[in-house]
Image (cartoon, rainbow, N blue to C red; front, side, top):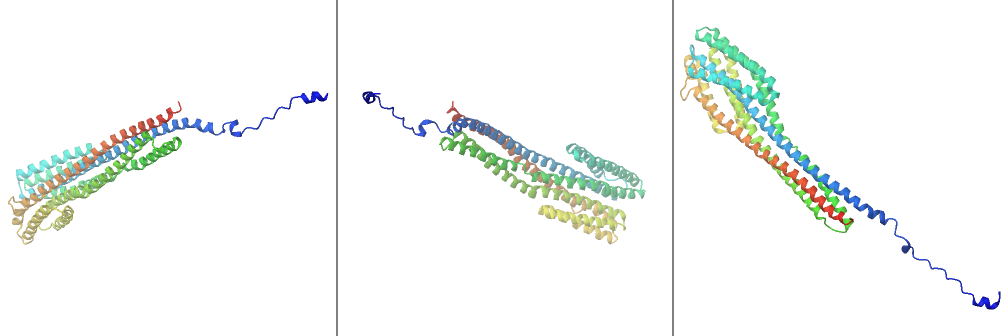
Length: 430
């Protein structure tokens, strides 16, 4: 090639400069991260719906269970009152029958009517108690058989007493002994069982389960708020915030309501249930003592065991009245025991007829009048305490039903608000 040709040849093309790596391609990690955000929002939406609905369902169920426990407590308390009334009526009937027996011959019509009324009321209460509490039905059926047997034996005693046959007194003692050996143990068991049932239901706190579960679900919603705030660089998601506030208000409000209910129930056991049971026990053992007073006189010199039974029952009455702390009721019992002391002095001093007159009379200072004053006052106390107990259980039960409805509604509202808050973020990707 000639020298001139080499001089005219074009210079070689310059080599392209290398471009920065950042301008060549997008970082591989950025696209997958951004593409996952809508899916995560959808998952959070499902999560907040589940959390809200679960919150409402659990809250409604727990508060409803609390209301049901209070309802059962009320039913068991009513059954306790029935059973103790049966016990009182039976011993009152026995006290009436034995006292009338002392008169001899044809018993006073008023006492006969009272006895018949008490036995009839006992039968009705046994039937009502069996219907109210099926768990007690078998025991009450056996009790009814014992009551029928007792009443039949009393009729034999009456028939023989009217004719002046001494065997009538033996029939009377047999009836009274059978009542205490067969019927009263059944009633004692029923009293104990129903007292425990009422106390257990009043002590049940199923509502507190909601507080623990509710706090866990609330924490879940708060974590959702934190995630959304970090992902979108926004401090607050209004929908999730409202959902969390609703749940927080219900949890705190529920805790306050449950705390007050628990405190009220504890007070109710101390101020109503225990005094109610103690007063009923005082009436029961008081009537038992009154019957033994007459049985002691009927035995005429051989009634030491009946007098000891009177003392044992009187001691229970005194102990029970100390738990009630009712000065009026205690003074009335003291008035009767003073008369009984006089009866014993007369009988032990050989003045049996005078002792019988004081035991069977109707004057203001007689045993019948003073004991009736005590028993009547006891009925009033029992009725008042039973009403206090029913009212004390009814008010919080209504509150728990309202709380169950509000908790369910709050859970649904929290779910909807949370869903709306997440839906606004999700629209930014569509």
